[in-house]
Length: 66
Image (cartoon, rainbow, N blue to C red; front, side, top):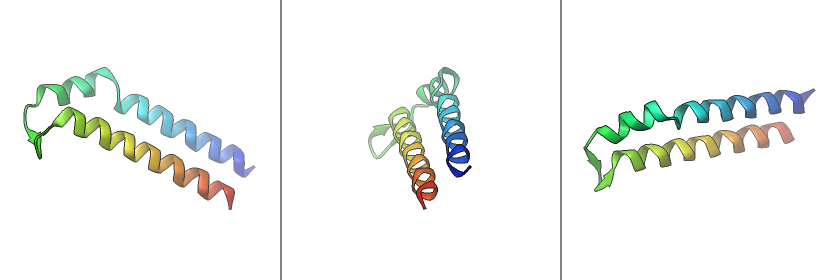
């Protein structure tokens, strides 16, 4: 039962990631010109979303193994 719930949560994280790293949002961050510490905002956005998705997946997997 617990692994099924973890699987559903992982699918939800995947779908959220697909929505966050999709054309309309990437185009929005690509048009904005400000840099964050010299790094283009698009790169910061993609890296931050990727990092959050990895952390969410790790949390779900570790929580499910207990």
